[in-house]
Image (cartoon, rainbow, N blue to C red; front, side, top):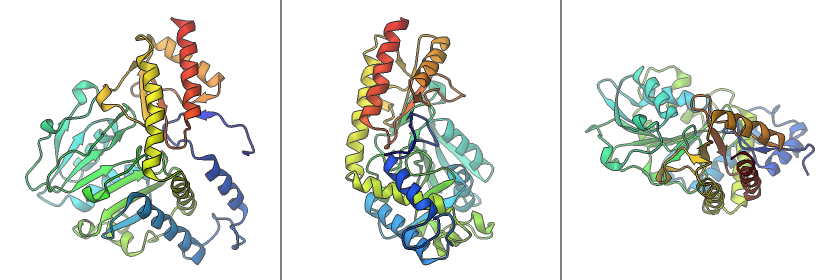
Length: 364
């Protein structure tokens, strides 16, 4: 059993982690079995850490069926550093990168890429306050494009791609930070995938990068070593001292997901949780109003509004009083956001739905 009382954590990130993972980390914090040192003390060049790293990478390959011609990197800097690393490496002089502008984080990625080279916004839903995703018909792709960048799940607005956009033969780069490993992913359709760990994969500060070897090989030379994919690949994610504890904890999360039955099983659970919550919103008679359009709704981040901002503040406060934490919407958009990542259980969502029904009944 946990050593302390835990709240229901609906925060968007750093987010809830599976309790069995935290308990195992607690046991290993003083000394890894057979090693006699904390996981935070062992050398990143030692065999015990090498074994942890390789096991985590092997589990990623097993979970996502990562083809052999892809490299798996576990780096520092989070997804935000990848906003710069991707174009620095892969957007050559005279080339254009297409970006799909589907939310606030996609917009940030565009701004960083424009500091490096030429960017074409292939489609945008900014005029709709990012309440929906672009359609295939809206995509205006550049012939011979260096790559097409997408954001698979928009954490702030609560939208998520249900299928990959059709980009032809163009290399597809995807920021999957907030829905990575929430369900099956077709790695082979991508040239590069990156995901900040602090949503579904582990602690903040670590980023997972899965990159096709031939695509990485096209990267520009002469970059600062730490900002170049090539040296990281050559050194197997140990170019410098990596985030050892973050990698260890990610490995424990991957083991937990495998124990849950893998990505297909996780997807079914996430679909059931999201349906329960969206059904409660839709059945409220308009008291709760979803932000994302129904065909673009995220399974990970459920965003909605109440009749007034004062009621939203009251909702957050009373929720906290009932140990329902992290429900305040992102500061840039307001409202309510319930992030229901893998480690959130159906029972946790039922607790939230019960509170929502009670709150609406008292405050209509």
